[in-house]
Length: 178
Image 1 (cartoon, rainbow, N blue to C red):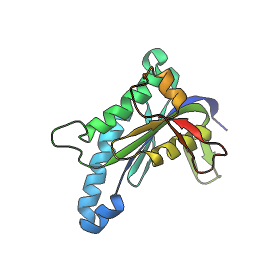
Image 2: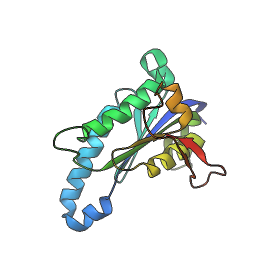
Image 3: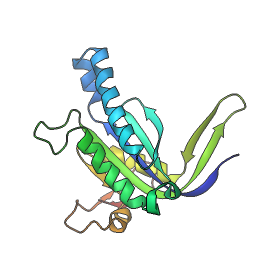
Image 4: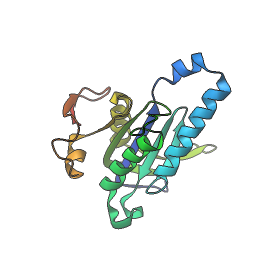
């Protein structure tokens, strides 16, 4: 109770190779690196959306059209995904601080409180969340992966990104992605 169903954008950004980092660096250094990544990503997401969860070395951002200037949710999603990669150093002479992959999707979801009498959480539930997470899981370091339909809505021409069919865990049919 206390929620609504509507169109939301979901962004997942995740550090690649954090297990390897954990084997090669002291825990406090790994924690500092993860903290730096989560801080940078959260600041980007906070410009147009909100951070729903921090999950170890991963951040989940949620975007609601009515909370975005001009309701330009697709531009906000794609732009923030690019900004997150730039915020950790992609496209710079020094290169990335950490290897990060991003997945984004747009679709219908429940946004509100879920839980029990004693423990509740404000969250987003729906296929769009699972799809964005799976797309992020298929992104290589430095990549943004999105549903092909979202790339088209964003006005990304054929020269931007590689078209592919992804078989995502839990999905009956392959998903056209870029």
